[in-house]
Image 1: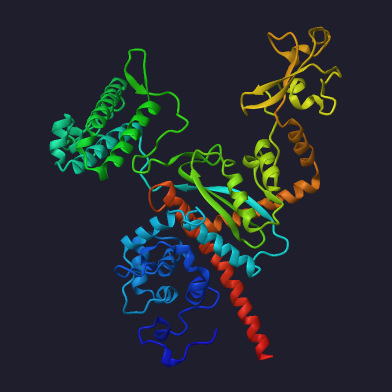
Image 2: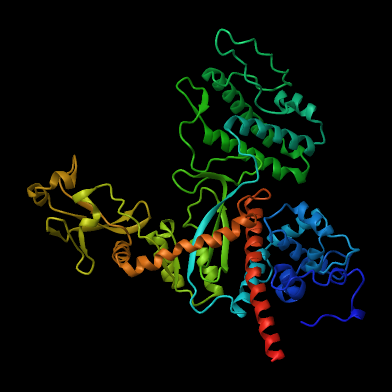
Length: 570
């Protein structure tokens, strides 16, 4: 693109101050040269800055550039990006801001991200997804993805922004948050609310107090007494089981009593605070139901089990305990990514709770990628994406094959009694045991795990009694063999047979290259959430992925410009 003449430039233009500020092939260069093409106006229909009436507001294109520039390096907070835009000439050139204009405020960026989370009125899709998909389409138009792409899918943890607390702090901090919210909603002081509720814990700076210091050994010097605790500070010996039980019982009783009281008198609260107060009430009751149980004496104690959907943070109630592997645990969310291993393009991304199975968003990710690249026929994935039902649904609805290790035989019987040792003739509807006895006696029952109809074969009692392997095959208490098949048993056996092909395993080995795409997400701020909530985590992940795709597009356009310049020079 030819440079503008001197008469067209302003003395406050960053490119006039530093003509080489935008390096060709970089994301700032791409944003500075192709802003209007990257972000068409229809994406931001409804933004306050696009209206012709009312006071002037920041154009959405400028705010989008600043939103994406946050993730060009290692990621930064919203406030840090605003401060960076004040002094960085490269960023100002990419945004189209002159040197004498102040950048958008942190509050403006926060309001704009809320706008991006809203669904577009024309297509009913969040705007941050539309921005990402529009960049992917431009990458497709400029041949970023080659003729032989290799699509794969995987996930990686994202640590939550909120503090992860134990049960006592969850209850205590939750009560204090509820008290602060009630005080603001009713225009009272926190001291008045503490007196009204009879709960001095609301005035404490922390839920737990200092544990009593005990000397270690007879010659240990006398330890100094701990500083005085404010009213309501729990100052107990947490190694004492009875003391812990008393504290938990008190906190549990306070929660149940106050939540019931708050709900009865919710009409006293200003309307703008009611939703937040009810949300905090639900979170407190969830902690009580998940983390506490009654012991033999009827007291509330810590539950010996971990609830499936346990709350881990009061400030970030959507975060959950997650498990990346048997030994690797985390608290927060999961970033699920589907992209091309060859080019590095990421076609679809979503963020789920940390305890959600990796295979849950697979259909949504493949569907979005299929809408952008209709020639996708196969996607590589690890064992988490190898469920037979997920394979079947994606193959039937989208025509995409999931190349993953097949599910293992989880039948409770091992050795001779394993389900994989029984031959099933699906056309003749017969089953043959390892000793060669065939039966055509079956019933179609409802499979409790999958809630689908399935075959249950049964062998005659006389046959099983005469079999020398009946003890190993039947187990204790059974007189005849009964075999319950998977609702999609035929497809599952087909997957297992295909997995034995060396060519399939050789192709699957390339899935390890997907770590390059995961690294492009985590090294630019994807490992740590920058604010609270699942929606904010999705906005952050899509911003990081969009910036990653912009790097590929910038390189492709820079290469095309160099090629055209060489052709003109020749």
